[in-house]
Length: 353
Ligand SMILES: Cc1cc2nc3c(=O)[nH]c(=O)nc-3n(C[C@H](O)[C@H](O)[C@H](O)COP(=O)(O)OP(=O)(O)OC[C@H]3O[C@@H](n4cnc5c(N)ncnc54)[C@H](O)[C@@H]3O)c2cc1C
Image 1: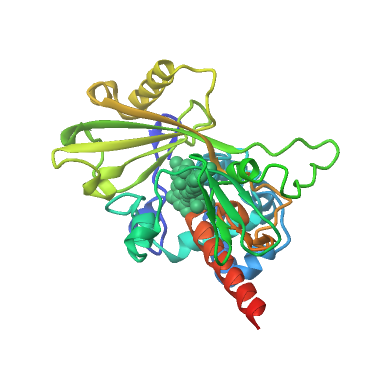
Image 2: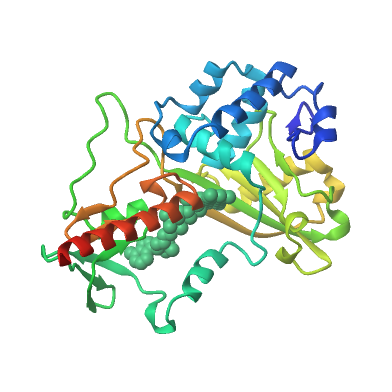
């Protein structure tokens, strides 16, 4: 964690005991904070998935204060760490999601798929007959005629009639467009409250020679300083060497928000300046900027009130899945897909009886 002009290590004692012991006296939270982390771990591990997803909820920031974490622990650790996971530095995201992600982090390792995140759809697709997928084909509308067999209209004008039903697996704003006027609109926000903004991010990538990488460990660098625009960064090739050719390294830098009013060149210059402060200008000046991605809808906004167990069936033969139906994670997206299929199969089985 970058704080007060230097890096301080925060480590999980169950995985990196020595590092965590050495971190006890650092300025990232007190010894009590570190004890509270252990208690939080026990609390979330004792709850089932369903209990977590339907528990009473507050914002994450409120939960952390209720648990008793110090302001320094929240500002220097939780804000950049969970703020980076939720793309929400204010930590307004529901405590349900905090508990869920905390439990995932306690149970599993952080990983990068060796062949990239596209391997998730690739591996799902590999189990299907090769002629069952239409790729690069935009859907413009889905129309239901109350027959349990909605039809799907493609951008080309072609209409596909479903046999068993339709499961829409697109992100939330796309659902609203495709079903415009055909779906019950969501209830308006309570008086005095604004519509929840989507969570956005900007990701910048840099390549460098291996000897220009400041560390070789697979660690996540968090900005705990409360200053600057970088939230977190890491060297992807330290985690998965397959993310670059053998003599090169890849750095991934994340900002929270879209920075719509800052041009790409200015954003890149600002990031390079900040990284130079972190790692030294002599190293960073040799790095080559590869790409900047601005992702307007990185995740749905899941601040309270939330419903993370939404019914996938929204009309005759029409089902929804996606991270906005459950938790805004890969896990949530996959779980919601399974739920939608199970609901469709159950409804069709009942229809046949
Ligand atoms: C930078 C970044 C890092 C992340 N890191 C993590 C992480 O480490 N762990 C984690 O659990 N989650 C992470 N997430 C969140 C995760 O990516 C999402 O929660 C997940 O991808 C949601 O899956 P989904 O299937 O609901 O939607 P998506 O993955 O968005 O898939 C929706 C698909 O629908 C397609 N589509 C949209 N409109 C149409 C249309 N009209 N016709 C046809 N197709 C259409 C889109 O092209 C897209 O392929 C991250 C997100 C971002 C942006």
